[in-house]
Length: 451
Ligand SMILES: Cc1cc2nc3c(=O)[nH]c(=O)nc-3n(C[C@H](O)[C@H](O)[C@H](O)COP(=O)(O)OP(=O)(O)OC[C@H]3O[C@@H](n4cnc5c(N)ncnc54)[C@H](O)[C@@H]3O)c2cc1C
Image (cartoon, rainbow, N blue to C red):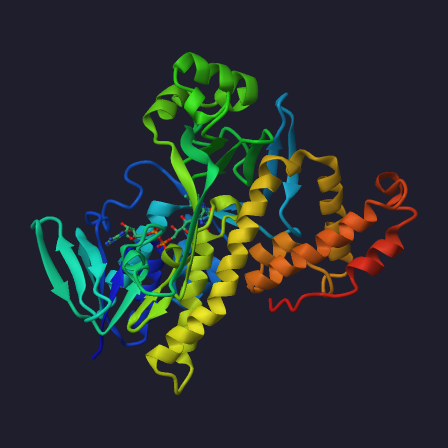
């Protein structure tokens, strides 16, 4: 039986090991972290993620969807918090469409336990990948607990070791390996809204909450225990950037000015603000993803900024796409790896671009009347012509339409909306005078949605 190594037991590595184990391959999954099968991967803090349709589809393919659903809290739309505390709800899609808030630690734990229960899968914790030898195929590892290094030569190596992948660093030494890494000028910090005294939620648990403030924003996703994990996204520099908020007095004044209603719900705000790290937001593009017997997947291949809530979903979709290629008869591994990177790379690039664009939408445009009108029109056209028009958010979130198709559709729809807004008095007359023209424009072509 073949012996494969998966480097990284994070979200993507754990799911991949289930897919590969199910297909009869013997897998060892290495992770540099201590064993988190029993303690969970969250390190004590509750950090959550938005899981949407393509992630669920990939979990279903591994037989894990039904086990994951009880960990999920449905979020049906965005709850926008204005500066004066007024709240507006913006649905994500049609009634019945929602994204799911799920604990990263609980989800990772569940998937590892599922993999662990498989006779073909074994885990090695506190085993770090140091490097891959491009010439002889040796994988240099370190047993962190024993403090010793050793060498492996697995038949296949899957790099799911995240945005700062050690395997990818080795592959970067290849000639003609494309690599691009860019940081946003913004960072993020996690904060908390605790549960209510009765164990319930202090704000609506069926929404993803956003406090948009143009160049920065606060968001909050609900947890099953009644708490919310909040994330402040803000520039590092400038008078209101992280670097300027160095004292409790300055931080208090900042939250009083911009997030007063949220601050009132965060009794540990100052402690969280100064104890929790400020983390950077990176996009990584690289190619090729396959070299000899190695393949990069998930963040190791395509780390993206988190504003579309798609990084994990894209990584899960990688696992499903790879499994579909493995299941096709007559392909050897090098053909499978090649087909995988050719199919997935354009989609990785597209979701990276969509994620960057969505930052602008979340922190600024959700409060812009013109953008809201555009959303309203798109929703109405979609409702009347569901077979012929789909808003871009729905293509990305509620379908498995390739990300590259969704990005092209975004450009097409935006160009059409830009045209409509040049029509005289469009904002006041769109319903009575322009509706037929709007429909004719938007329905002229439809991307090939598969789902
Ligand atoms: C603030 C924030 C919010 C996000 N929100 C969402 C969201 O709402 N929805 C969504 O879909 N995505 C979201 N993401 C993206 C998501 O977190 C990632 O896309 C996802 O974690 C990628 O999974 P992965 O398994 O590829 O990498 P990781 O989850 O980073 O796992 C990598 C694993 O490899 C291990 N490892 C690393 N180096 C080595 C080494 N040298 N040797 C051995 N092991 C190693 C690590 O310990 C880790 O266990 C968010 C990301 C951020 C930063």
